Length: 241
DNA sequence: CCCTGATTCGC
DNA sequence: GCGAATCAGG
Image 1 (spheres, helix red, strand yellow):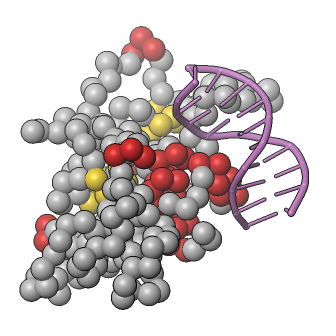
Image 2 (tube, rainbow, N blue to C red):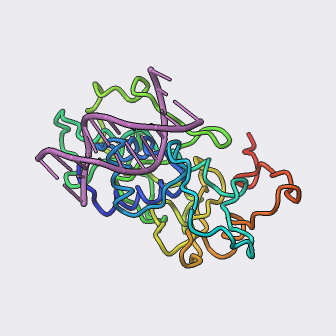
C-alpha cells in the first residue's frame, strides 16, 4: 500500500483533526500505526501532545514575558470529537470479487442500494476509496475492534457496489474530502450527522482555521487567577439525542 | 497489561 | 521514503 495523494491528504486531515495514529491507520487500511506516525513526521505534521515527550522547555531565553503566550485552547479546539473513520475498507479482498470496479479501492458499502437512486444532484466531490465517516455519541469515537468488523468471510457482495451516497444535506458543503491546506478545517455540526461539514473559508495563513475560527481555537493564555472556568463545549454544545 | 507518539535504522 | 522495532510516558 503506497502513500497516494488521497491517502496523504486523509492522513493530514485526520492527524490535524486529532485522530490517533491507530485510528488513522485503521481508517486508511493497509498501513500500521507506526507507518502513519512515520509518515506524519516525514510530512512535517506538527506533533500532538505526546505521552512520552514532556515538551522540551526552551532553555534559551525565558525573559520574554511581554506578550501573552498563545496556546491552543482545549475548550474550543475541535480536537477531540473528530470524525471517526468507518470500518477499515478491507484493503485487498483476496477473494476474487466478480466484476468490481477495477481501479480504485472500493468503499465498503454494506448498505444495499437499489439502482434507481438519483445521485446526480449532489455536486459533492466523491472519492470512492475514502472511508465513510461515522461517529457515536457526544465526542466519542467509534473504535472498531477486529472482532466486530465485517467478517471477511462475506467479501463477495451479491450486489454491485455503489459509491457511498452523501446525504442531500451535505450538498455544497465542505466535506472531509474538500479539505486542504488553504481552507478552514473548523468542523460544523457533529461527525456522523448528515450535515456534518467543515467551515471551508480561507485559512488564516499558517493556521488550519480561518481567522474567525482561529479566534476560537487559539486564545491568549491568561494568568491562572484570571481564567474563566472552561465551558466544555468542544463543538458548540453537547449532541442532542 | 493496555494505550499513546517519538525515534531509530535497515531496507 | 518507508515502516518495524524499540523506547518511554500515561
